[in-house]
Image (tube, rainbow, N blue to C red; front, side, top):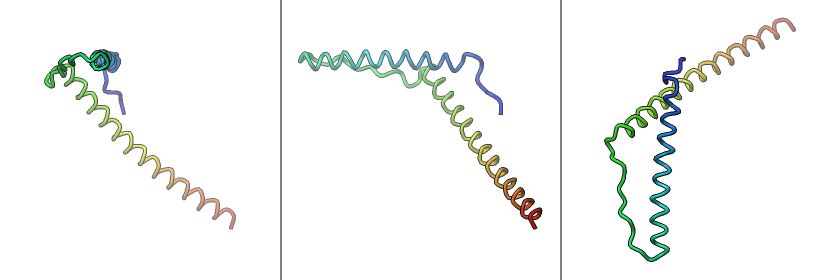
Amino acid sequence: MENTHAPGQLGGSLSLAVDRLDKALMALEERVRALNNGEPLPEYVPPQAGSGDMQRVLDELAAVRAEKDQLAAVANRAFDALGVAAANIRTLLADEAA
């Protein structure tokens, strides 16, 4: 199975995710600070659901999940093939011992 990600694409998405996490943490810190000081809470403005960055991350997540499913299927087939090979070896060894 080949890698479907362009070089640097995953790293760019990770950087984007880290930036978004930083922004969310800063917003949370502002809210906690306001609560501790008895101030009114700053207004929370969630990220736009239709933003291109968010959609790109969601698409990449779907691709990674599909790759994981493909890897699991290949691993299961390999496991089955190893089981058949082990059974054949046992049969050959039993035949030689007899």
